[in-house]
Length: 126
Image 1 (tube, rainbow, N blue to C red):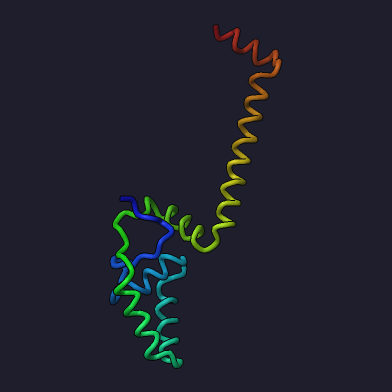
Image 2: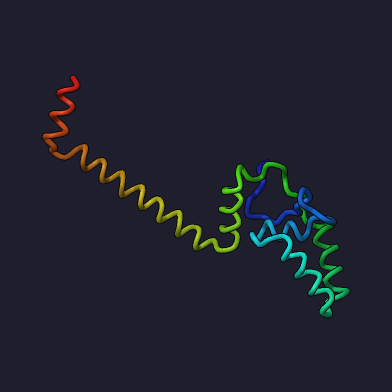
C-alpha cells in the first residue's frame, strides 16, 4: 500500500513530544518552531484545556509518517504546495506541460518542414 502524500501524518522523526506540531509543519510547509510557538501561545491565551485535548486526540488518531514518503526536499516542498493550494499547483503543472508541448511542436515543425539546410546536413552525414 502506497502512502498518500496529501494526507496528514505525525512526524515522529522531527518530534519533540509526539510529533503533532512537526506533522502540522510538514503538512503546511511552515517552520516547525512557529507551529510550536503558536500552539504554546494559543494554550496560554485561554485555550488551555481545549488545545491539550485537541493535541492528545490528534496524537492518538493520526497515523505516523512513513519513512521515505518524499524522494527529496524538492519533492516535499512540491507536495506541501499541493496541499496548501491545489488549484495553483495544477495550474503550474498545466503551464509546464503547455510549455513542453509548445517546444515539442516547434521541434516537430522544424524537423518536418521543408528545411533544405537540415536536409543537406542529414545528407552529408550519410
